[in-house]
Length: 210
View 1: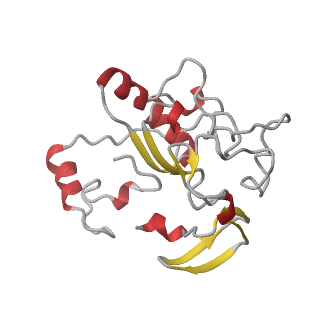
View 2: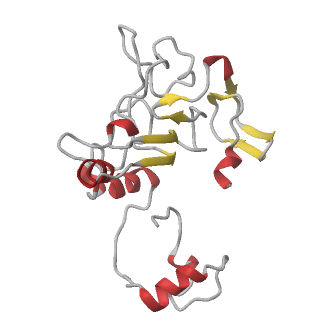
């Protein structure tokens, strides 16, 4: 388990601490009776660089950007000559590989326009004429060893508020909505939009809490 935004005090048994928010008997069993405990380790405690670390086996600063690649429209964090653990498991171990959830390690937008993709910082990524969503993401999961994928680029943190299945946008452009910052009553709960921009008309941030 590779967890983001979890403190050691949240894990039962780490500091002989039983007073935690969630009861985790199996984790406690591993920590106290069967596991190896490391108390002097160092990490990059942010989501984008930590994703690169676990997928590549490298320190974060060995990627394209030391602080990680955060936006769709930027080249992937992996540099030439590096491969992901998914590529190794698939090509050398014969595994079927898949990834679901937030991607957040780069990849450019597909484009057939002579000027290339739109500005990565634009809020109209989905409807911008310079992007061609009949094509898959460039340098997305499919190019890093994943046979199948169901991802969003930034999760609930920013646009586009859409999912991509196996590299392709998972809804039509007719179903694009421009979301303003705010909270919306959606089928799964109160969906929160932190930054304005385009996304699926059915986008519901609370799906990430399921």
